[in-house]
Amino acid sequence: RAAGLARVPGSIVALVLATAAVAVFGLPVETIGSRFGGIPAALPDFTLPAFSWESARFLLMPTITLAALGAIESLLCARVADGMIGDRHDPNQELMAQGVANFVTPFFGGMPATGTIARTVTNVKSGATSPVAGMVHALVLLLVMLAAAPLAASIPLATLAAILMFVAWNMGEWREFARLKTYRLPYRVTLVSVFLLTVVFDLTVAVEFGIFAACLTFIYRISSLSRAERITAAEQPLLAGQDGKIAVWRLYGTVFFGATKLVESLEDSLPARALVLDLKNVIYVDSTGAEALEGLSKACEARGVALIVSGLMGQPMDIVRRIGLYQRLLGHLQPDVASATAAALAMAEASS
Image (cartoon, rainbow, N blue to C red; front, side, top):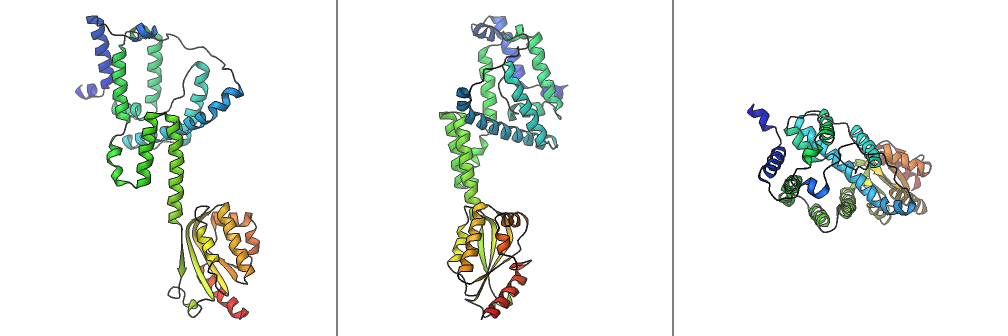
């Protein structure tokens, strides 16, 4: 019995006791009924809103921001719940259900909503282990609206304010501020900035800035992970005595607009005979990176240097085909760096 009582949310206990105390002692505090006249005791009517471009163009960015925020919030909430109950959610199902619900509710006077960590954690701590808990939650709210609306009108607003403050405090994730010292400076700046913008301005501005800052941080991190490494004769014995004639470079990471300097720098130090470019460890090439590779190919052709590419596969192979660079490299593609080095040596000897 004690274990069962322990699962009763404390906010419900506080709500019931405070409402009873106000009614018994006649305390002079405002209630839902005295301030708002109570809560509706019937289902809302279907209402078709007025659509106009003048309104839509001002709502476009807030709509996109809230949709992105709602998706992130709901998936994060589902992830937290997975860890608490040892389950695994279906992201597509979560987002489809949320999207359909948020599309329908405005026609009945509703507001967009997401899965929230505060309610989910409360549900789990009360014994919830499946999506049925959310259905029960909705049915209880429906029951309160249809049958207990007069009783809900007696709830003191001060009690609701205290519960909301408690929920907001639990949602704050204040421990993250204590953990900031373990993260790099860009993450610290982003988190603190988003927090301050939320308090000073509003959530829309904070989310827009947060997404922008996260994109910049991601670009910086990815570009810093991309690198070029020159292969020497210690790894490829065929390169012995070929300094200045043959150069072999291996690229790592991604070749995108933030890392094209890796390819452009190769143009400044081209060898006399052949350049081998090993792309086995390149996982992604964007359009700007592809143009940089094409520019390198043209520079080699203009200076009479053979460009041999090895290890080209996956997405990099696809974009090289789409921009037409694959046709320029026909006869100069090799499966691995050893074969490419041997081919470069043969070309160098044939041209000398």
